[in-house]
Amino acid sequence: MQYQSPASIDEAVAALASIGGARVLAGGTDLLVQLRSGAASPAAVIDIKNIAGLRTISETADGFRIGAAVSGAEITDHEALVRAWPGVTEAAGLIGSTQVQGRASLGGNVCNASPAADTTPALIAARAIAEIVGPGGKRSIPVEQIATGPGKTSLASGEIVVSFLLPKRPASSADAYLRLIPRTEMDIAVAGAAVSLTLAEDGTIADARVGIGAVAPTPLVLDASFLVGTTLDEAVLAKLAEAAGAAARPIDDKRGTIDYRRKVVGVLAKRAALIAYERAKGAR
Image (cartoon, rainbow, N blue to C red):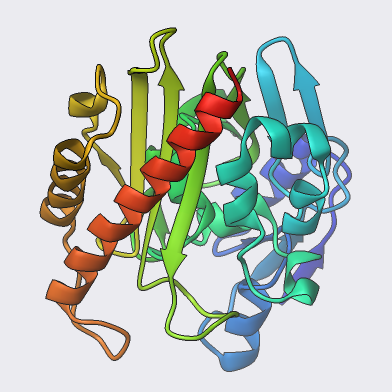
């Protein structure tokens, strides 16, 4: 097995394109486990941690750009990002232990394509855009289009996700992410839900976006248009829970049954919506 540590995105793309079966190493918290267990045996590992720009968070007039190799700890330590996107940073802060968060990257969490990835529903709710570079040039896609199934992505041969763009946060808006895990910490989600809301001047919801995870082969975008114009009364919250459960396509396994996951994801969506709503009111 080869190991390469390219100094530029172009070098990384060229290496991936020329070596069949190569894998990208961003943080390594998934890939190294797969290597040691024998679940993965790539012809080459392409380490992108030393590429300029892939380990930085920058704020611009259009929002935040987060490099694909930025770790969870770096995300949760970024005060401006935490203020603007608390749900996204909450999700990043839930991945593994403190030690794991010092290595686990945002790009790795998304591109590992686990149905239970914590950051993906939060990025979906945030309308995050993934910037991709490959042999054919650059392209940008919504985050929800990356995972196509468990462990599978839409990335073509030689393509790398280099960064994620979070849009500029409108006034009177906020987000939240919640998950349920079997243990108190360091476990993967049985279900997860993220909600991002923007309020109008009268306190009603002007825009809503909901992402759910661990309840289908890929994280899902939930149609939340019925939230617009409301103030999250009990009837609306019940409709949100019902919609989340109806959209879910979970499996039975040792961590939860189909019916349990459908119930739980609805409860989480309601609670996350209430948290986001209160945060948005406080941001007015």
